[in-house]
Amino acid sequence: DLFHLDIMDGAFVPNLSFGPAVVAAVRQVTKKTLDVHLMVEDPERFVPAFAEAGADSITVHVEATRHPHRVVQLVKEQGKRVGLA
Image (cartoon, rainbow, N blue to C red):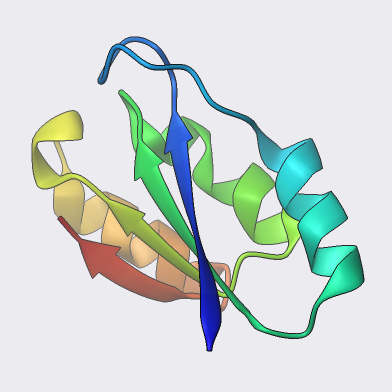
């Protein structure tokens, strides 16, 4: 029913994956929900780009930011569903 896309920055987790351009490309070929899971340091830096790329929901790690409540608000301001991991 959805695509879960793990975004890794090579810092918060050791793996490196892909960015907003790949999410935008996936958005072009499906109407399914895109659940973007940001496994990155300072996720607030990335929320607007992934929202613009077509994410329907954005999940962030509570320990990846000093102000998780602000990141939650930022995701909501982008009109997206939000999750905390």
